[in-house]
Length: 343
Image 1 (cartoon, rainbow, N blue to C red):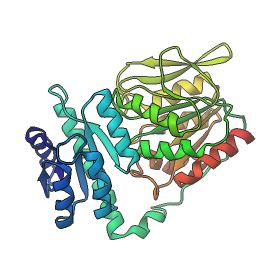
Image 2 (image 1 turned 30 degrees about the vertical axis):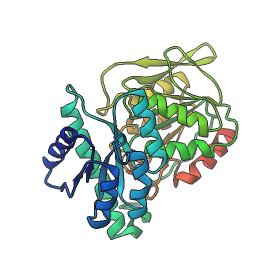
Image 3 (image 1 turned 135 degrees about the vertical axis):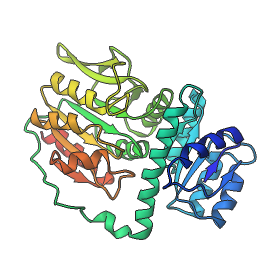
Image 4 (image 1 turned 90 degrees about the horizontal axis):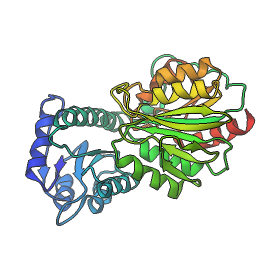
């Protein structure tokens, strides 16, 4: 279902999705009230939901849609502005699976590919849960090989995530109730404006200061730093201190910011003394960097499949045998506390 008050935007989204024969448009509606009424009559796996609409906006409609169908996957679409990003992050906190910014004239091609991939991944995940929910809790294929934790106390906690990541980050940082001796660096695949709003939300719920990283910013213990949209977040050692560096070098894994350059730089700056967490997300970003982490003596944790919106990024590091533990989201904070103190 596509829900947007602009017929032009609805047409753009529908045309982008109809290119793929695996995607069927079951409804096109102009406000949240109609979306809620329509979902009662016509099942949908994924809803593209505008956040600013007359009659009923997306934030109001979202919990009502989830009441009708708690398993439906909702992608909120927002203008690429500070206000639009803040609303989108609030929608994710309220239960949306993902967010994306509306297309502009120079981004329509990338928007079309992006929205198709998100709809397919979220739709297939929801379909699996509806048909055979018990299979998600069982290991797929060969057993996952785990490795011992690194021997040295980590100097840095590095987190990478993508689709479903904001919700996972809310849960993880809210669960980290102890004061950590390590700075926290976070790469979440998001555009500009969205990452700043994400950092502000994490600061409110995460028991510690959290900001969008700036170039040259000193990384302080028990503080969290989010990679800005369209910039890679790198870690540099200057004397005894760690410093954030921002780079607009080419995309990696079709992303900027990307997890891999963050981990590569952290391995060099921290001599491998890194605790890395890979959370829900599409693709393989972070796998190459995680391999460098463990080869240098660091430790990698991954979110398990059952609690991931998409088990792409965490699944890649788990299947390659790079993890010390593969855990449900609600158990990762306790494991971080254990490793950060013990190592």
